[in-house]
Length: 295
Image (tube, rainbow, N blue to C red; front, side, top):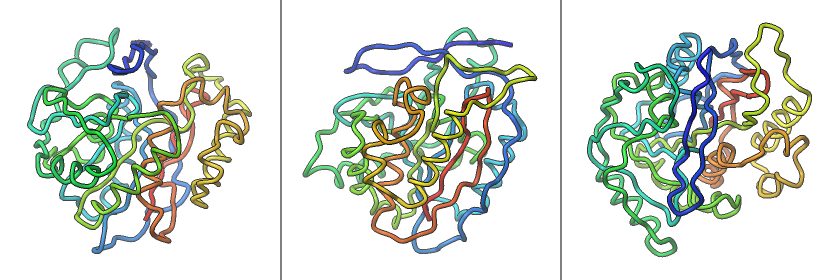
């Protein structure tokens, strides 16, 4: 099995390198169906994004495609990936540029993957409008989509015909990220799919792809706690998840893979829509692939 390495872009934070999740994922069980389509606004979602090798997991890619087939097609996609941490909020390329292969040690073919989605300059303008009065905004016009964006999109929208804009994670603090989602929420009524991309549990030191791999108790408990808090949109619990969630120190030695869900949550708080979990299950022993749909 190819282990590989995955890099996180922390240009104004400390630079870091983490081991990538490799190998085939376990069978994913749909915990509940996606919410009904709405013509009024797009849902906001969080997706467990997988490693570059996840594109070879036909079961996972099929589930991603089924999930998005049950939504109306978005006019554009706004992505917040665990693999781009930059302060202030930074907007990626607004034209088609080469992908960011933010990993190393994988087979060569993963460095020739393509996802030639159109750029989204109009969406970038709209994001700046929504954040203009409260947030500083920077631009990274040559930064292509990283694997936290294009890997899941290869399963969700394989035609690559929807404009995509990636924005950075500006902080690890929960409350400001929930507020960021609130500010971006009007995009949903404009046909934009807001997507957080990461993992609700992400402990690289516990990966186990052996045939006898067992999901540890701490992973199950944290996953169940997160599911309940998200289902209830409990901002009180989620802003204090580092203190309140069981098993959090094992589930999240670092927090960049969890916090994108908080942006997706924030964009849903002005509604009473149902929260569903279109994809669940564990891979590599301790990695929950729970994905979330608000609305």
